[in-house]
Length: 440
Image 1 (tube, rainbow, N blue to C red):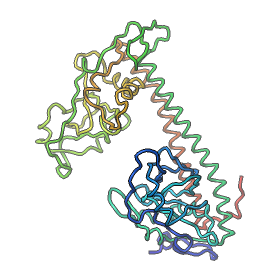
Image 2: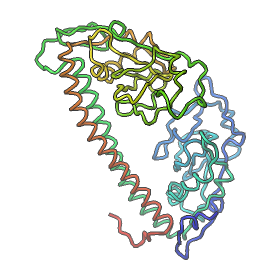
Image 3: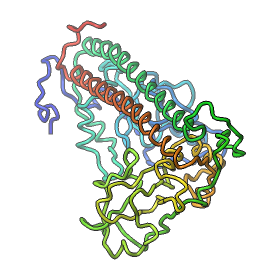
Image 4: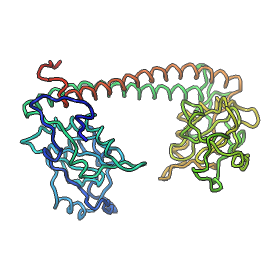
């Protein structure tokens, strides 16, 4: 199938439609498709797409180290030259980059090395072409695999590409480089704004749940490393003294094919959205399965926290449409003696106080898991219920304002990225003649 016809595109008469292999050599770094053995200590970087920065430089800190003999095997078969490109062909498809090498590195089996034939193609033009929706459509159409998408080397070699004469390629490359530099700088600036908003958000939350709302209150040392000073009239307690905590241990052999269209809701961490349970995304189970585990059946205003993978993701149970129960990977918590509000605990567990505690407890561990014993021994500051209500009301208002601003900035980033892709697509398919465009 011709992608040109599929998109109903008409290209300028001097442009040609060819296969990618016509204008570039496509090299498979690891024909065996097996990753080499890792070095015990220092080795040579074995880089995947995530180990290459947007500017093409290699992040050797994140790259896995391999033995020199494995690197030599690659060096016998090919050499990475200045201006060569990499293209991810497994999982995160595409994401092409012009790679900049200042040391010996090996390429992951998940990459394709693309060596432009300089007499036929400008490598910067090729970069934008490979990053365009024209190629992205082909990756979607021709990739295989349901959960982990991949592209075969021959598929990549057969990608349909549109190639204008070199002078037009040069003009397109110059035009897009200038435009993308401006757009990328704007996008990065907005990303930094979101980071600053997140820092401000965390600062406000942590200040409120450790210092309260009265700036003139007398303080005392809490005696807890991750808390610091708290108002003199506040107490320090532990989760286990005031909280019901349960998590699912196993699932009595429940399989995904037992999920049903109707019945009690099965809540997983992926169903958490903006601090609440997104009921529309939950799976359902039978009444029989629901009744097997009363300790983790949910109630209105329960606070849920993830304990595996992304630790500490939170959701308050509100507006339960029917019966609901926990899936694995989540704790259900609820106050047992009216010492605190679930909404206050939500903000407390969202604060840097809890983050510091988790960091201290997991020092040296590579397994991301929140053990119940660790969780219930979390010491935290506890004001009166009246102050908790005031703190919750204040944080709801302030954090909502910050989140709204962050949402607007994220929408701006999304629109800028859409414009970026549109500009690339129109330039590399000849829909606009960049020679008639003025650079700012």
